[in-house]
Image (cartoon, rainbow, N blue to C red; front, side):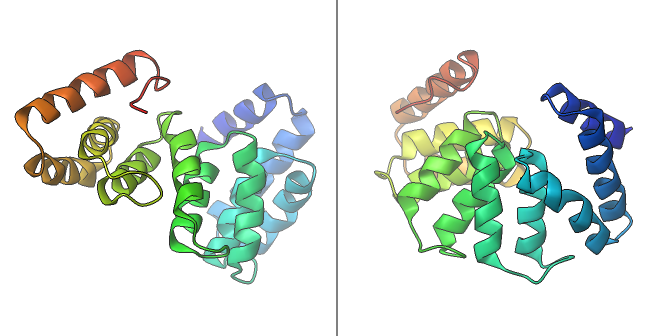
Length: 197
């Protein structure tokens, strides 16, 4: 069922049934643990601009499965997918910039990529963006905005985010907490397009 759904999504994005079939073959190979075969199916698709295949290839380079572990190559493929709007790639690229893995550490770029993914409703990116606001990495420290993003990440299923939100709340006034909650509601009602800054 999941494979069929992925194939349907690929076709809906304007790719041919052959592309969907090749992606599906790669997915089946990946799930079976045949990572080399997955790479063989996904690399040509990634080179032709398929964002999902680019993300998957980046993930494989990041984990060193089916290919030699190579953070620089992971960043290359994540960037290509992220530029096409792939939220998972944007979040992972933000992580790579935040940690300085495969690229020079750059908190501002990490914030940029986390925000793009967070605005698509990605709970991991919302949590990561909140952490950046909490510590003031790449952006001004702001507990209100951090609280808002932690709250949204928690609502979207990121379990640890509620603990972080509560830790931020300790450093805030009741008025600040109320403001963060209003901002979170406004953010959700705008489909993540009006979220603080």
